[in-house]
Length: 241
Image (cartoon, rainbow, N blue to C red; front, side, top):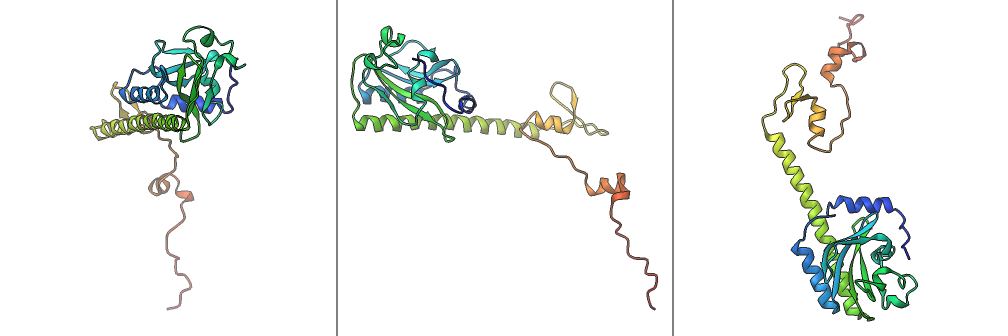
């Protein structure tokens, strides 16, 4: 049975996109977590699964060869509908999964437990899950350990996101520190491709900046003298001497 689409699906997908993690290569920091999850739960398969629009993609995997599956058959698509861990002790007797091709065929999922990966903004973008080919139950200690590891996955994602932002900011600073060719007349700036653009366009191309326009006092006096309040002293007529 295909999982329902969670409320605020658009915001959830945007949160996933913001991590820029989909279709990236293997990384030891994530692989260590899946290895630990498989060992702690004594299962042959452990995955860091990210639920995209039409697929679930595995950032890290133990005991599985494929890198993604359709969202239609995804156990993890069910798991992200709730904040709590989803435990399926025997998928063959569960109405939601008994006819699932991942149960009836490879990889022959019987037991599944998935902890949602919940971002600081409460978007559930995927799961840390463990899988077995036979029925089983997790102890309370195993569940708490799996939840702790899921939090470490989100921490790794957040560290990467912040690191990318800092690298981008440093690059923009380096650009601003270079000698910038500027027109002596119109004050346009020449970019790296040799094209001239306004100051606003140049800065926007190197940073996420919006401009609000105003007129300084000097330009107000020069171009709009009729609306500038007079600062002259009263003429003094009628003063007594």
